[in-house]
Image 1 (cartoon, rainbow, N blue to C red):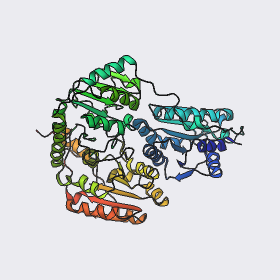
Image 2 (image 1 turned 90 degrees about the horizontal axis):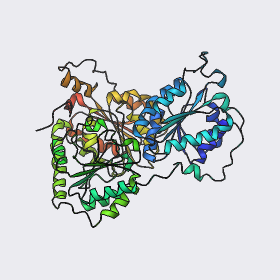
Image 3 (image 1 turned 120 degrees about the horizontal axis):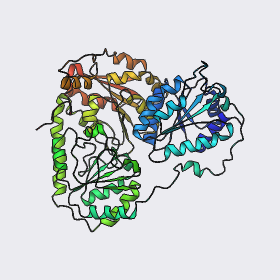
Image 4 (image 1 turned 45 degrees about the vertical axis):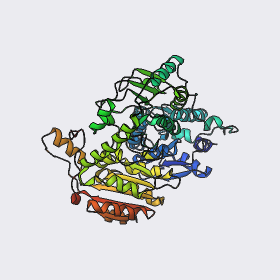
Length: 550
């Protein structure tokens, strides 16, 4: 068989059932092999940027390896945006790209799609990158790449295969036992060092007002975390860890984790121990680590490089989040004595902070509640970078199940639509809801036709203020209100919706939002709800571009 066919057999052996791809001159043998192998759904996207974000969104929701296939040179470069975002998000993603014939590699001969250093370009945005240099090593390189992508800390890995290698004959692999391929983690997660675990138990056992801050590294710990909350612990999550514990639980603040709320920061001052589980405590969420977390902190993380990366901690415990939490739970049961008033105070804080924050949102104060009431509890929640997301999308729209939310962790605009399309392919019948701004929506608007061709169920809520709202808030706060280069001409969204046979609703009053989304949710297929912010009013600035309420 040829290497192009081997790639198809490798994907099939690893139970990959969906890939996002654009066929091109330097990957035809791979794509032809996939077509003849069968059993793999190829999503034909309109651009490599969209394809890369779709593969990312798919992998986040599915909890499995995402696969992206591109051409070389310009095609691979177009995918950089999504690969970079997958690195930010820690998404296990395998990128397979073509390459020019081996004889022209790195010779600058002007061959079609040839670039100076494609491998270096991929290495700059991925966890690592490989080149297949001979047909005989293709299977091993692909296996190594998939293992690296799935090994914590997870991330994207790129493999380039020159077109002549794709066409070269090789031995057909013997796939009698694929367990080593299906279980792609190279090594078992390390157990905490005994001394560190013993100190962890002692510190937690003595806490009277403990809280957990849980990141994406705790994505599979929901049942264990619920037991901690039942003991009386409080909890917040990162924006990437939505719904690990249902956010209507009285002892979790969800992702309303402090920035923009004086009440929450003040409450942190009364917490005598915070346990940070699998989270980077990212600068975007903590305003570059300026949010005042509880003074005493413990960090649990599988990656030893996480120690002290953002906030310092009194104790760092390297270990698998779930295994460490399970062992800790068994040790502290019957030993920890939590302040009897803590649960009541925590629940009161949650209600008070949310209500006070809502009042800062002007005419949009009830949008999160209205949309949440209209959508199924298990629906997917995908957001782009927009003022609406940075205010109520992150903080007030509740999530109830893990692996149900995605947003641009690296804060790149325009990634929401393709992330949502990828998520929809992994939804297993659940509804997918997208929240976007008009500017971000247009950046990858060509992928609407991918969604149409694939007959997806996707509800798109577009907040249209005809410009870059958050940039204007920055200019108000730091540049004397000089709003320059931020106004954009928005398209006619009704006509755009007609082009892809999408149901369309236009919201021109704040009170009309709830009915519009109820109408859209009752339907299937593509649905676009435009919120005309020019008619309703400008979204108020949010912290740090507006001061905290006293």
